[in-house]
Length: 441
Length: 183
Image (tube, rainbow over all chains, first blue to last red):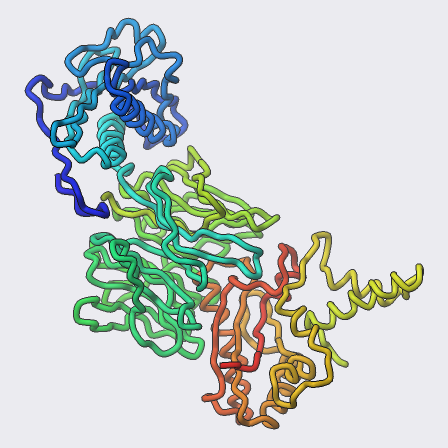
């Protein structure tokens, strides 16, 4: 597994198939996350080192386990056994847990592993996942990397455990870019900020001198597109995370806003508004060729590609109120898909392709919801005084958005499962809005 | 003075009410009523500094055609209905005053800032606020002001004039504000 998404690129993670690990047995142990509201699965994650290790390795072994526990607990799908309640804090990689004892404290899944320091300074981290009732190994793997990459290894292992137990795709090894907010509402300071999905490695990318809004990740490069008032009027910019370089998309009449990348990362789709008429365009980032997709006197904005790149969902008030429309990616055949009461904005196509998330406004409330791509089966997942701007987790199971109360000045990030369960505030150092989830690193 | 609902008036009235309160214990009924009206309903609204600064320039060294002159003598903003960008008759009167001033000072350029309340999502409100600013621009151009003199900057819901979540705050925030372009 080559890692091209981490900056600086300094290491390589190797997933080794180890001889001592038997092939994963097809076990029954599984968290059903498609229904929601089911009991969290009790799981114990042991430390990855014991007291005989060096202090540095002891720390590392505990920290790795803590990151995994935190990831699993944050999903609210798992009941993570507290370390105080554990029968053992460490079991060597070559041993099997005493399943009977773990069953007594009602632990259904056990994760244990070890971390070792290699002579060249790199670390090797191995782990095993067990079904304590069937007494079978469900998964095992070992990773090698530079010691500084321990956190990413912990996320990759969390993903392996989550995927094995839920049958769903991974998402812990990802980042969130968002807008960090400070100052009073009429002089709000807004900065681009980035952090790991679990809040670690937080950093501010811009200094707050110019208002920035609506950042979105490239699906293929460590790059962000966003809106900035740097030039005095709103325009679309690109930010290279590796170099910190900010670049205006181009010299356009009027304003440009609402940018998103195409699924292949080669194009942007965005709105340009000239004399009060906003239209949707794509631009090829390589040859700078531009294509206009809408031609309508109404507001046409917030475009989002389907994952196969063949269609675009967007917001338009061409039917008087803002509603969602789907068109082909050449602009042909636009069709309205939302027909409920209220207004519908900020559509985002799910990475699985089958759903569209949106913000709905009705009778003084804002909601985050999903519907099928033909507009059927609308479901509201979360509702409050003011919330907007959903973004999908890489596996399409979780949505993040932001919320503000009627008192105001308290924008915070929240996440909710596709089932509408497990609503959770995502902690940030200061107030936060406009979250965007990265693809898997 | 006709409908001068700009915050300037409110601020002055509020200040007047405060002074009246300080001077004697029985302020005039109308004055205090207006002051309460200015702060909206049950929630306390804070008036933005943008407004306070423009009121604070009360010295008599104001140069005709300057931004201070405009701020003191011309109503600077028009208001819009919810999700609307059409100009009311009152807005037309205010813009007529602005246009007369601009005709007097033909070398002055202006910025029209478009704004929306926070009862909408960010990108849609940006587009809506641009439409509002363009309505003002189109009205002025229709009366002979050169489009070269006008820059439109939409702010969406990013820069409320009145901080608060109630009808009166939202109504004050759905606006287009004309300022003299200092660049």
